Image (cartoon, rainbow, N blue to C red; front, side, top):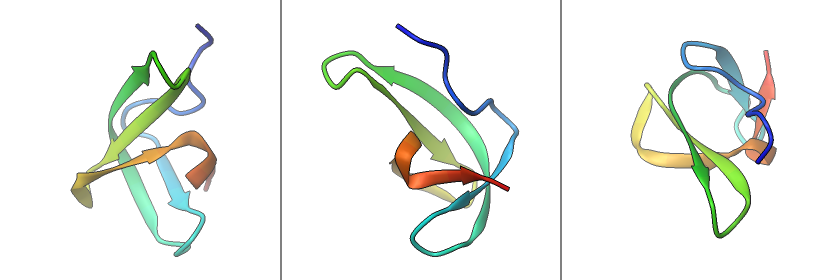
Length: 55
């Protein structure tokens, strides 16, 4: 398992919309072998690393 790209509290942008969001929770999805993130602005939606970019 590798280290996640983003940390809790970090400001990032959603690639598809360009909206600025803050990472709320980070979790490793074992069967998909990648990290998912929940952001403060959309708490019922999760994003994978490839859907987010550094601000």
